Image (cartoon, rainbow, N blue to C red; front, side, top):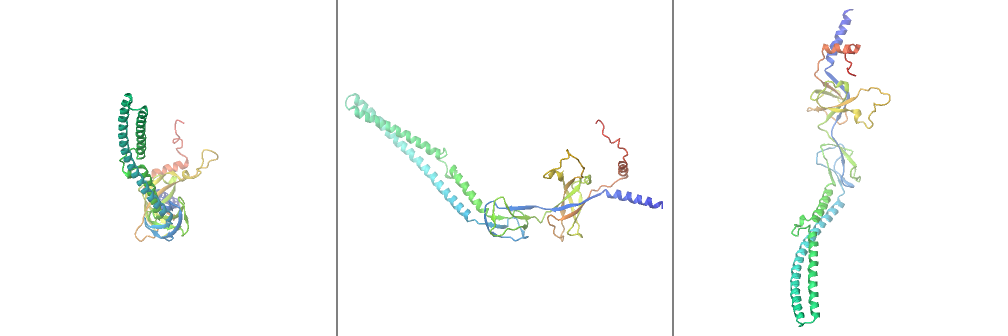
Length: 349
């Protein structure tokens, strides 16, 4: 009879020493990339190229939006580009024409100056009348005013040519502007064909006739590869958990299967910190609640394993590699009995 209590204590101590190596939780779920597919242009869907739960590849056509309005917009933009290019070429031709007109006007000015000087000399000698001298002065003023007007028109044409009369047509700002509008119209036309951005499974596939609106999700693609597990451990269980440690995973859907994984990372904040309304522990009645911290575990799937799906529940157990010692046992007993509490009291407070 005395051996039975001793045997129970021995078994309890052995179980306690062996239990410190593994930590586990059933608050774990399979996660994967999930992309909400939304169109970037508006219009009714005229073709759906995939079916519900169909596997799709990146770049595969999912659905097509009515592109007729966007084809017309592209045609208008292309015609506008050609019109503006013709306008720029016309401005260059007008600039050259004005320069020739200025040369002609300067010749007329030189003739008017010579005629005025000649008539002035003859008027001083009383050979011609004063009226003829006034006509010569008027012709000279008109010639000079014409040169001034032509110079102003030349400056206007130079400004219209962006300050460079020899500018290349496609380098003109107006041409660049309409080319940008044309490229945008072409981009909108391409956007009427919505393709998959990742490999995965199509979900919530729309029907023909559904009106697509920019920013509004039309369907979803859920990844079926490179899945991971988010295990929410109690903060008291993560004392010796570190990235790189091995883990075993049991998925509720397949109770007789075991997956192996590796701890990739540990979240920097508890789940409560990401809540919409975080708990305010600084006021009111406070009850201490053990917090949960998310641990990301990479799953390794072998050939022949059944498929894992995002959202499945799992049970995770991490091997910390730690073996408890008798020193930990004595310190745990002392802490439980309240021994050594005074020695642990911080000094200087």
